[in-house]
Image 1 (cartoon, helix red, strand yellow):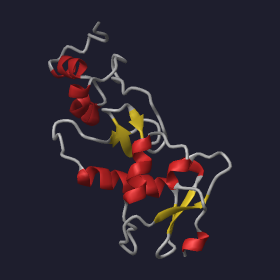
Image 2 (cartoon, helix red, strand yellow; image 1 turned 180 degrees about the vertical axis):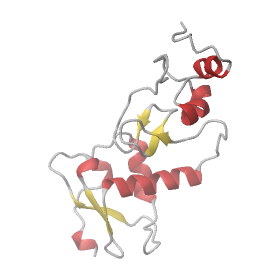
Image 3 (cartoon, helix red, strand yellow; image 1 turned 135 degrees about the horizontal axis):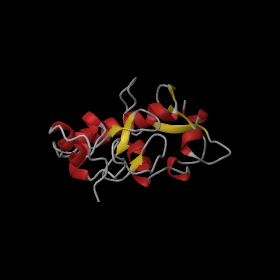
Image 4 (cartoon, helix red, strand yellow; image 1 turned 90 degrees about the horizontal axis):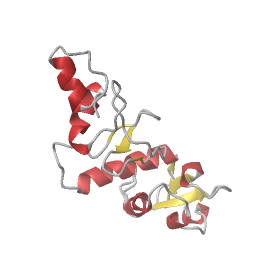
Length: 157
């Protein structure tokens, strides 16, 4: 199967973050469970990872960019010491996948780098407010105001 792989390396692709490429290089194929077996089957003219097709050198299974990113996120989460108050990944408001890293302000899947914002006041969401945003799409201040029955407050400077 290896001869179907391109000569280019995973690091040769343009990734949203270099960390993603490092994780992809070491993930296990979910079908044959061989580590470090992912290669590039189709190197895109754009040079962007999101346009590439990947495959397992061992069993020949093909993977889309979305599938590779999901595997990378699983590996990342499996190897990380969790901060249980702030999730490592939340639902991206652009692609609606659980691939947005709030601590880094980027979606590993679609590349969205927009800061998460409160649906009420439009303020940027701070890291400590991420658990509230995940549930209600609001900042802590707006959530408190609405919870206390004070829905008049639409902005806080």
